[in-house]
Figure (cartoon, rainbow, N blue to C red):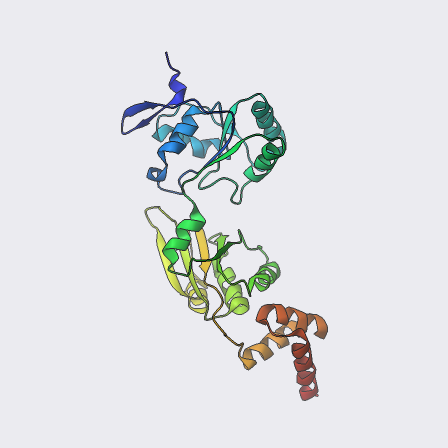
Length: 297
């Protein structure tokens, strides 16, 4: 007789999962709509010897929806070292371990990366089970170029760190994808408009696959103005199009940037920072700063 814990149900029809080969399985789960789960993911969750997840309460909702009777094992950033060693012991013993995040694809902004590295280092098989992904869902819905894209995770929480990060990405010839929290999206858009360019195309993708899914598209300046004082709820992916072709910085904008920077740092450092943000030669910007100071004198 088969073990009921190795079964799952779809629309009331019970299906027995096939045994899994030993190894670590990285299983993508829905980012909102539970109907986005794949049959292969259900087979893997039901068939694994151990099911590891970030939050057992979140994963339990998915398991209950498809009548999977596995007891999930908590593995998250706060217990990663201790729980990770237990999972590695199971993998060394030839067990199959399925790893899921709260939503989307494991290893994308979650601690699963460490477990995957440990398994790979010991020659243990690591198998991705693809499915829902918030960055990719946002990219295809944003209406921005998708032939090259760069996923950059969460921007830093503080304004200076956020601006420095955008400055590093100014010249990346690809669409940029970020995760962001609803209470910071206004400040993030304002910083992005200042550093990456006000006219750069972007999209704020909110509550993907859920009931109130929303795509708001426009320039960074338009979106920054729209979200400046807005009360925002839900999970957000910010997608920013690649740099505008041959877009030379406006002289007045460059002067304003230099004036702002030199108020907080020495001229040489201000010129270097402005070079990062504009793509203009640092030497030219430094000479421009000196000329501006002479003009003030």
